Length: 221
Image 1 (cartoon, rainbow, N blue to C red):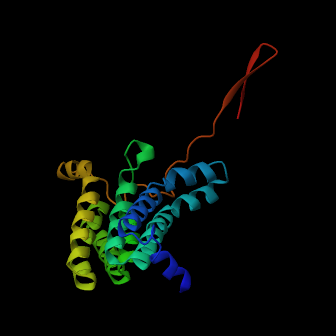
Image 2: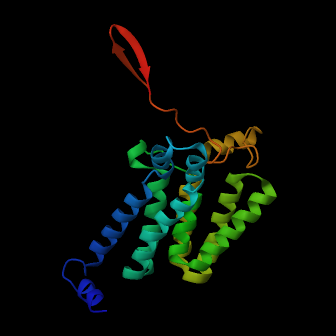
Image 3: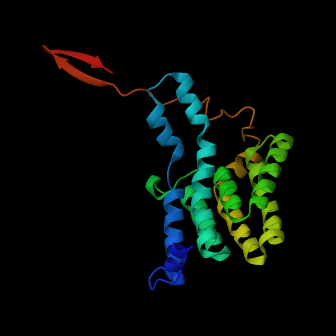
């Protein structure tokens, strides 16, 4: 398209470094969006059924928030920029700068990032995760196994640079499971059946304020 040609050959955006920097910054910002806390804040005061259904959609939203910047970077700048965006979005999610560099485990985000680079690799990641989750009943094992298999699938579908990015992604995701490794070795790691799902987790209690009326303290929601 004419618009794409103008952008790619523009003296500013046509510069490869500028495109890489823009892709990384956009991916980090998208990845750092704290989906679960935001959805609890938005729907926490609604009816329990609606609020819990909204919380259960958090993994799907995390997948989409990773897919968008990676797909844009891959389509507009090529595979190398797409791989940088994939690492940036996973890093922004697992080490959220707005939450003191504490974020999620990155399973759904890794799935979205892989799908943006190679849809086939994303499908393989999902299938391996489901099979491992059913077989082992541990989310940590399923995520790490699916991430390890994605290295091979990226090599096959996108080449050696993509496989190296897959190794880096595995390292980022594995770093968020350091506590789980200890609990698993001690037999204290919760299983998928015992761990509460996002839909079953208690929502934040409504805020209460104290108001003084005629010298008496009245609690008001």
